[in-house]
Amino acid sequence: MRWALVKVCVAVTTMVVVAFAVPLGLVIREMARDRAFSNAEREAAALAPALSITTDREQLERVVASAGSDAGMAVHIPASDGVEAVDLGRQRAVGKDIATTRKLGRASTTEVPGGSTLLQPVALSSGKIAVVEVYVPESDVTNGVATAWAVLAGVGIALIVGSVAVADRLGVRMVKPAQRLVESAHELGEGKLGARVPEEGPTELRLAAVAFNSMADQVVQLLANERELAADLSHRLRTPLTVLRLNAASLGDGPAAEQTRAAVAQLEREVDTIIRTARDAKPQTAAIGVGAGCDAAEVVRERMDFWSALAEDEGRKVRVAGVDRPVRIPVARADLVASLDALLGNVFRHTAEGTAFAVDVHNGEDAVIVLVSDAGPGITDPEAAMARGRGSGSDGSTGLGLDIVRRLAESTGGDVRIGRSVLGGTEVRIWIQLDGREPERRGHRGSVRRRRSAKLVSTFNRSRSLP
Image 1 (cartoon, one colour):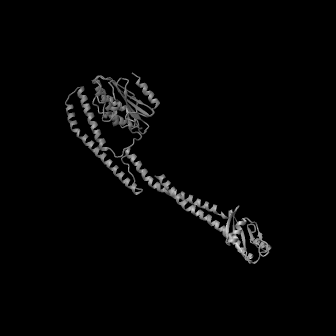
Image 2: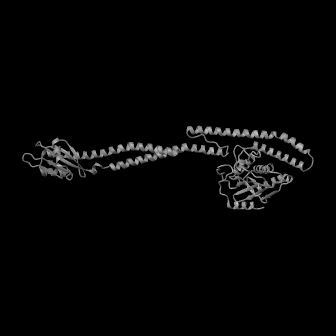
């Protein structure tokens, strides 16, 4: 928009300058020509009194010399009453033009090499007509024209530059509010719900800013309503959970009773977490700051301690690797717990008892890989499994658990891939980016177009080859 305004102003100003400067330049050239011939007419008129008195050659030569125009003036006196014709000065006009002027009795101009001549008829006392020839050089005709054209060109350029400056200022006044509107729209799309647009600028942009701010307020209100609804629904789960906890407490002692009570307690904690998260959520999405996130190794150890008890009951072999030292990742602890529980829950839900599984954590300079693999039948259609709301189609899976994992990885700029594990079953690889890059565009969910860290990939490939 800004450049378009500048181009329009340049075009309009240029047309105006040309419309006025060209005719003015032509007028100045014509005025210079008229000035030169007017001077020539005055010089010719200065000889008229002398010619009316005498036609003596010597006297006329003195008159011409006193006028200071002997080099550019000539006098042609015809013969009469036995007096020979007199021609003073250098004749530049042809004899035909001189005879025509003498016959018509009025002044005329004619082109000659190097300029023009003014032929002025003068009546003599004898009744004859003398012709005074005044030479007008081309330099006199164009004297001052070039300077005038240069001045006009300078004025025109100054006007064009001034119009560009004015148009640029007007464009800035219009473009800046539009840029702020675009930036706020991007911020709102990134989840920064506190983004608003100052209501300034032209009327149309002010109206657009008002509409955008109203839309953003409505989005915040809708999200607040959804959080309240989630909190209310979660709160309603406490009643059946209380009954379930009381029933579990009456089961007595034994491994099954303890596992049931632990599962109920975990479910109560998750419900409480949902309620607190829903009610404490802020409209403005906060960025992960220094020290934010969690220790992936600690979370993996904790969740594996929980799932190992159930694995022992079902006769499953469990392997955990890469959790002997802290591994900081820019992911909230609750999100990582939810993702691990979703993957491990899928292992128990979709594989037979006795099927082994493993969880590996690989720490690199710019990324962390969390690998969950099993020795089950595997997933025949990984792309369909990654699609939200659709499972593989053969086991009734909804795919929501894998979608939770995908959103966690992509929030860091990473991704999720499903493949064949070294155990023979499914392998879910979570790539968590550590450098805070924005998620890259993907052709479809699960596909990756990113250059991997060579060191981390080599470490990952070596770990897969281990028994």
